[in-house]
Figure (cartoon, rainbow, N blue to C red):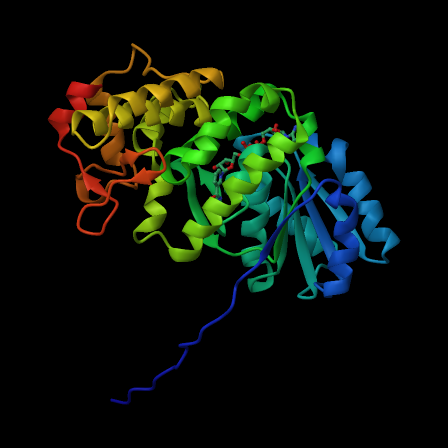
Length: 364
Ligand SMILES: NC(=O)c1ccc[n+]([C@@H]2O[C@H](COP(=O)([O-])OP(=O)(O)OC[C@H]3O[C@@H](n4cnc5c(N)ncnc54)[C@H](O)[C@@H]3O)[C@@H](O)[C@H]2O)c1
Ligand SMILES: [Zn+2]
């Protein structure tokens, strides 16, 4: 028998910049040209964002003599599918995109996730640029390198880790969002306040009106803090072994609520409900002050998001749904719980806390 070793141990620098600037959309093509990122660009977007922003971006590439093609699919989570991914790839193959190409993901989290996954696998990997245009995408999905599509068996089950070359955030693009989409993003920003930034939490308490009047400074501030927090967490724990778990605050019960509602309750609404329920657990377990929980409930209400589990959902159903969720390893229910606003509880150096079912039943 011969043992032949294939030595692959190497360290690779996958660092990238997040550029947040008013009007940066117009400057992206020239920045990309300067960097020599590629010779041909697939601008992947959805039907809503296409009509709003893809034309100008494509023109900008043309002005810089960069060949590009807009590939747009119908908007909606149902299209974050393997079928649409294959359709996008076929469009690129037919247009002879080769290894000297790059992907531009222009849109919300749906576009970012599917375009990122196309970039991860097309000719075994192309560089890609994230241009997030929803608040969720700006503060969450565009950072961290998780890319995926949904399947009939569950969301985000097929995908890859693939870090973008850069993320460009133009706050102007958020001005066309509906209030509902602003609320979706705010749920994650509130989460960042609880898990890591009490000043951000206070800013939200004091400036909700400005945010809902689409004030650019207020939006820029929460995006900047959101990106900084997510970036810090992901930097320290790229593949979710410990610290990255804190990003799951509100998501363990939240995912169960989202699933049980058959996705009629949106992700932002579900995690708002989840943060309150998990916060109640933390209070029940003497880890968190009730006055802080009340601050959280008030802030979520101020953002126009729900705080209560719908009556039709029973405790056992929620517990079963949590056990099925990929975040609960080996049937144990694990959560991350706050300790103070801005700090999460650690037990023996770990953030994941095993929770006994009777306590969950009591709180729910
Ligand atoms: N990869 C990650 O780490 C990660 C993290 C969080 C969420 N996600 C994923 O992100 C997705 C949700 O993202 P989302 O909330 O951005 O949804 P989305 O991409 O569906 O966007 C929501 C709606 O807003 C529209 N839209 C986008 N930008 C707009 C703009 N500037 N003006 C007007 N309308 C605009 C879209 O066309 C869509 O109809 C989910 O699939 C989720 O799984 C991924
Ligand atoms: Zn989330």
